[in-house]
Every structure is written in C-alpha cells, then in structure tokens.
Image (tube, rainbow, N blue to C red; front, side, top):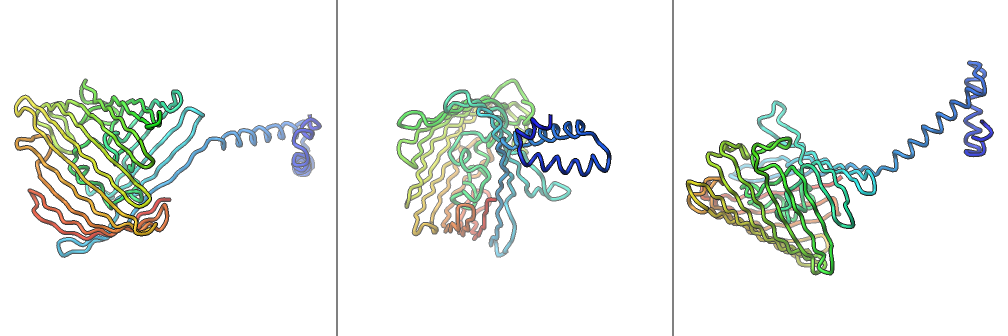
Length: 366
C-alpha cells in the first residue's frame, strides 16, 4: 500500500513516512500497515481541506467617523459598523449576509446588532436569479445600490426621504431578479414579501407586499428606473415604532435617474406615496431629492444636494412635517475605500424650524 502512495504523492509522502517511522515505529512500535492507515487518513484530510478552500467566502466591512457642529455645540461620533459576508457555494448558489453594529440608546450597552440582509441566491438561467431572504427593497436607486457602505455614498448621509421613512428599506420574502438584457441592458425585480409592520420571521396579516421595479442602462454609467410598491397595513400594526390606528392601503411610485460620468455626477429620485383609509380617503406625499457633483480632479468632487418633503393635509400614516434642505459639500477620495467629506446643511422643517449644521466624515471600507 505504501508503494502505491509513494507513486501518487512522491517525495513529500516519503518524508512524511520517514517521520512516522521515527516517531511511531521506534517510540510506539507501530507496524508499517498501521502507518499506512495513518497516511491514508492524512491524505483524506488534506484532500478535503483543499476541497473546502474551493468555496469562495469573503468578509468585508464599512465604518465611518463623524464630527458635527450644530446649535453652538460640537460633537464626535460614528454612524455604524457594517460587516458584509459573501460566499459562492456552487456555480448557481450564493449567500450574502450583512450585519450592522450601531448605537441604540435603549440598549443596556448602548449598542445593538441588526441583520440588514440575509440572502440566498439561485441562478435560474443566464442573468435571471431567484432570491430568498431579507433584502433591501429595490424601490429606488440609492436603497438598491449603496446599502450601508457609507464610503460609497456621494454625500455623508442618505437623502431625507429615508429619515422620514417614506420607503420601506427592507423586505423579507421571495423575489425574481434579472439584469443586463439586450442593448438597453434592461433589468427587473419582482418581490413578494411580508408587509409593513411585520417581523423578519413572520407576517402580521394575510396580505403580502408587492414590489415591481424595472430599469435600463442605455448608455455607459447612465441608469433610468421606475418602481411600484403596494401593501395594506393592518390596523394596530407597529411600523417604525408607530402604532397605526387605521387600515392603510399604500402605493408608492418612484422614478430614478443616475449618471456618474468621468466629470459630471447626477442622481435624482422622486417618490409619490398614496395612502388610503376608509376615514380620510387618499392622501398624497411627495418626496424628492437632487444630487449633482463635478470632479475638479480625479479625487476632489464638490457637490450639492436638494431635498424636499411635502405632505398633503390629512395624512395619517406618515408624520406630516414639510421639509426642505440644501447641502453643499466636498468629497475627497483618498482611494476606492477611503473617503473624506465635508458638508454644510441648511434645513427648514415645519415642526422644528430652521437648523444649520457643519459635518465632516471619514469613511472607510475594509
């Protein structure tokens, strides 16, 4: 048996056998047959070790540090630490997990862990995929592209429509996705999932949320997209720490235009929310933002962003707070995974009035 192994593994196995002869045969008087068995076990261990390393698993992350001046006070802090895990299990099956560690004032330790995404993807055929799990809802470009990697954000924070909770950030369910079809590079998403107010492990009612999104990329670095989201929020459901007092039928319509060229950057999105109850009828909410930047050099990009939130009188699902905001900033890209940003923001809100702030951020990926 040893002679066959010698032919297969050559000199390395001879050296291994030599060590075994010294250690086991002389010290413990183990036979040559027993040594061969140990060698076979060693070969199997090495074989399966190499097989397991064929699985491509990567762990990456994002973090950022902030300093801000507002209301006569300077503060230091950070947004969150994001761990991003991807794994190619087979040619067709892959896994993606994203966990965020963030400040939570209600936690005994001041911090908590949030599972932001947990996705199993199966490649059906070509560029068509079946996706199971918790995803970022493909409602607009920002939510579907940047996720929690603040090093990639064109500005320090998300647009105001995220803070106002206009769109549902996540959906737990099943979806079919496709991309890059034809000359226009057409793509689509169809998602059926747990509705608003549900937990990631259980729906709170029989109604399922539905998301349908489509986009094209007719030119290099140009993205044009539209989406529709529909759900019925049951009476008594808790959404973002708010208890909903009426059953609400919600429709969200979003349009997106994104262009990030060699010099000029443009990203604008608008969402029309229509909330209907038996008591108030249909009420409209319009949330929009416009970002534009210009590359003075390859690393330095000055930019502006305008945000606008407008609620119709009688709106009962969203918190009615008409808000406008202007941001002027500078972004300096040290490299792909290290960015420094400096912003001045003037904001006028119906409830809080005028606020001015200066914020600096150092964001990294690792």
